[in-house]
Image (cartoon, rainbow, N blue to C red):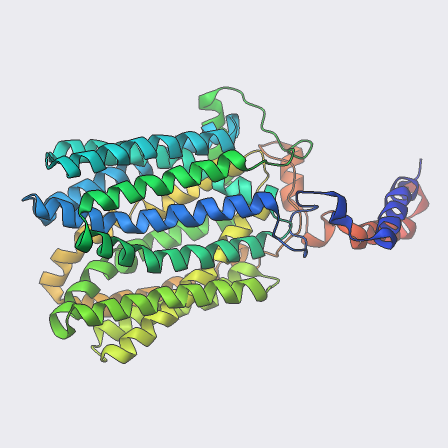
Length: 479
């Protein structure tokens, strides 16, 4: 049978469906990854709500920990230790969480993680309400929360493409909502601490996990595409396969390796040094204004990402990320509160736009059967060196001055963006509406990864038309 004989029925069906009405009319889920239709559906709405309310609670937690531990006689070191317990467990276990997410139901894992954190934060609330606050108990609760987060996070990457017909638009919408929640969270926590107690913040935080779990219980994931379910060869083999898939993509590990430099030199020192300089020189009100500008910038960046659709997403994101240097540069140069706020807004917009471009690239370029593991390596690599940068901020500021450290971070940010643009695999990565359903090693996988973007099968009517045209143009012996 000739190739056009196979393609023609699909073309006729697609054209007939277009005459009858929108292709997605009879579908509750997305029609095709990367399509340009509306992202909003019942199930995406539940996932959107789960992510938003969870982000609101997570941004309330630092205020609750700081106020609660300080109120019960602990110092700043205890607050840092409690936060570090969560971060260390999350970073250390998220790779294993990626393997579990590829082996089991991601939705059930996320629900289980939320239920666990509902329980731990309820226990924390009870401890603070009772006045019996022991540091090691708070650290254990934080460690359990980190482990639960490590089970939850990998599944986020594979859930978005299954729920939304337009992955970039979905990521942009989630980014906008999470940024708005990050603005509101500390303010809500501050009000609860002022008018109630730190225990009330922990109780509210537990409630956000309960609402997130409820949204995920009501959510119904569409059936996985044929061939997208992973074939497990054992836990260790799955872990090794994930590493091989990660290592085989230069654009993927290249970005993470470059970002490790950014974590140590800029992102890690940024928060503690900016807080110190702005509060000392201009007061806590100015620091709140600068943080609000940063949050507003992240909302703006997400909104831009909803509309702008660059063909080479990582190249566009790298250019946008240059704006991130404006924040440390403005604070390091002590330009005054208005210019610091402007720098923070520019930095937030650039970082948010990059985040959407990056998340969409990972979700649409990586085969679905290894996506959760790849995302886990991404998350682990991205945050592994953040605590190192935070730990080095104080000694570096004492040795060279906080202003010089921030200015160095601004210059390093610019160098990082130039490094991203200098790697052909990063700057030349072309957006795709579909994902290559081949993973692992071997000739088939290598051939799939080596194909040019125009050689990949397109989805929808245009892809069928192009396929017919290519078949008819082929020599007779190839048909």
